[in-house]
Length: 459
Image 1 (cartoon, one colour):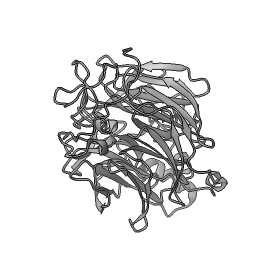
Image 2 (cartoon, helix red, strand yellow; image 1 turned 180 degrees about the vertical axis):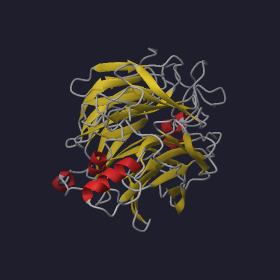
Image 3 (cartoon, helix red, strand yellow; image 1 turned 135 degrees about the vertical axis):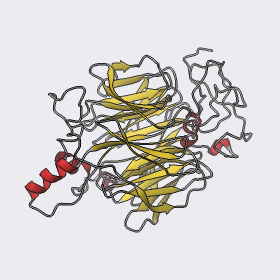
Image 4 (cartoon, helix red, strand yellow; image 1 turned 120 degrees about the vertical axis):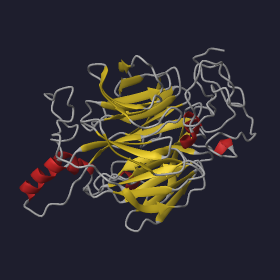
């Protein structure tokens, strides 16, 4: 068998207990249950459980404790499914209508140029934020609410760009939409047949894209609560997905080592790129949608030209630790990554090197989300110009990540110091997200602590 070709997973349906995940049915283990760092042992066959969960949990097909056998492929996971495109529903025209302007991150972004990663090209590489130190005190997040409804491990939590909703997805195959006004579940989106690994909001907050172990991507209308389209093409589990800023394209990455670019309007796969030599763990568009960053267990970050699919850059550090998450900074000049060596890195990809390292959390087994977040400070009551100046001075960039010991850890992006670390769940925290305009964030835990918690800070 060609080691570079993806292979289909074993049809076995036997339940395999996964350490730390307590899931009795591996077919329902979603992205949140991902597996540990692969070793040098011969790959063994996948038993069909969720790859996202695999990358995040000690059950990795290359792990000596994993019961089963994976075909001899270069990737640590097998895949299934056949390339085709199926439209389940006709896309209603109103689903793509541009909404009225939203007071979301775009406008906020303009107000925090001086302290965000929207620094001009003249900024020093060692100070990508341009932030002034010493203008803030440590943040202190405290529990605001607990949301219960999912029955298995939480794979992902993401606030809508408009700031009105929180989307959550789980190994229980469900996607839930929660209203922030009263923290009630407004919609439950059902269509996937296996655990959901990732979701992405369109810029206007009207659509949600999702990907799953069932090898498909789906497009949902938030207002109707219906699946508008199913996109097939990956030959195994689909681990990550993301809208471009224009919400006209979706990029996805899978265990078949491919990234695919999809047209939202038609559902067609516009481009299929053999991107890595191991499963793709994360994908991210830059600020203008012209580039895609992808990461993989092969220890590489690659940057792709959306227009022609060409690889523009390959980034790899000396240790080549598996990379489980990547995201462009708001100005598109830097990349934040997460590795299975308990570090986060901020890359100046034009110089092919990381310029900052962040340590202080435990992460050697699971794929854990990380985020850059602006501290929004206190509301000013003075005139607009003075208000913007005040807020600019009071805000600072911070990085947020979950950890395998159940904590959430927050760093000051500029100083790299841990400014808060607190126990959020009794199990590993893989899913976190920060609200676009408020000082609140959400987190989700693995089973049996499969609840979503909301945290608030006044700083």
